[in-house]
Length: 85
Image (cartoon, rainbow, N blue to C red; front, side):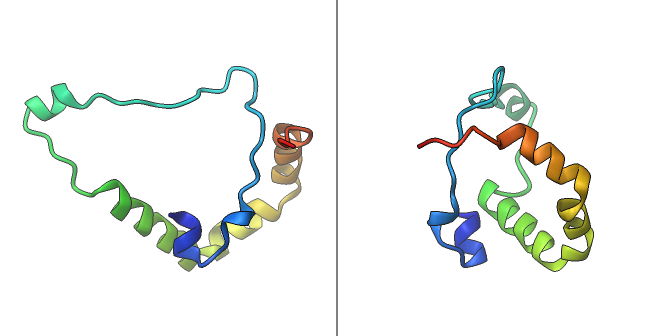
């Protein structure tokens, strides 16, 4: 969905092996809170669309972080050599 919103091809997805201790998924059970009358204000899809829109419109905020040396070092430590062949 994110690539579609950005007009990018799925070929940009690069699968990597999980890091040791990496959580496979986060499954939430909202049964109890719904029992108290809670309802989500936004659908997951709408929230993703809004987040993508915000990042597109606010590149000035995240671009310096992503291009910074500390981020580059972090990314390299996390993902170098984890490519799935």
